[in-house]
Amino acid sequence: MSFTRKIPMAVSGVALALAALGNLLLPRAEALRWTCGGLSAVIMCAFLLKLIFDRKGVKNDLKNPVVFSILPTSTMALMLLCGYAKPLIGVAADVIWYAATALHVAIMVMFTARFVIGFKLQNVFPSWFVAGVGITAASVTSPAFNAKPLGQALFFVGAALYLALIPLVFNRLIKIKQLPEPARPTLAIVAAPASLLTVAYIAAFGNTPAWPVYILLILSVLSYIFVTVNMAFLLRLKFSPAYAAFTFPYVISAIAFKQGNAVLAANGIGFFSAVPAVAEWIAIAAVVYVILRYIMFFRAKP
Image (cartoon, rainbow, N blue to C red):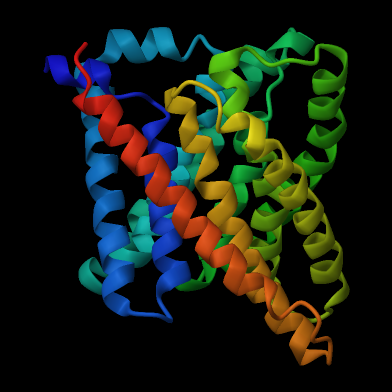
């Protein structure tokens, strides 16, 4: 299938964002959740066709540290979609969820073997957070699959990798400075890991004690501000498939702010209450904008 050659690997990041956005919008209308989940599933089917029918292109793409490091967005999306599928297919969703979690770990191992062993600073990108902290998507979804102990263990793995990657990524940004233009949108990924850890902690551990939520929420807000300030420059870049990086970080941040605010409110802290609503609308705008740019990209002549 020749059309699969035009499907970029990064499209799985859009599928992940849509699956997460559906969960964010669930309180507004269940139909919105299923619409987002359905679109996510369609994109993941296209991604799967890419893997099957363009193996040579995929193999070549995965030589790039940016592309390889965002590959786990596909397994993360699959984990979230299993939450949609569980009421429909029951135990089969559990099997797929465990398989997606195992595959995510396998990708982490392969990424480490290829790019961490024989380390080169110029190969470090913000997308490395996906390869590391992304495993906590299993923590977020673990309650639905009666796997909280596994989710709790993977939270600590993700948190440890986050602490290890923060100095590494920012050392690369400071020393080598400018990212190659096609990879610059990945700077937006900086907003995702702390927020993903916030949501993962609340899902796997609840909100007691509350102090880890406070710390993670502060890191989430700081990361969110850093990325949003830089978006003024990132949005001026020529479109590339890496635009997918503008989606999930904003969606997971909106979810983290919403759930974090609930914890704050339960402890008598009310100053944060307006933030989740604003972040939700920004997340919607980010996803819609990137989808429109992808549609323009696919409609363009080769």
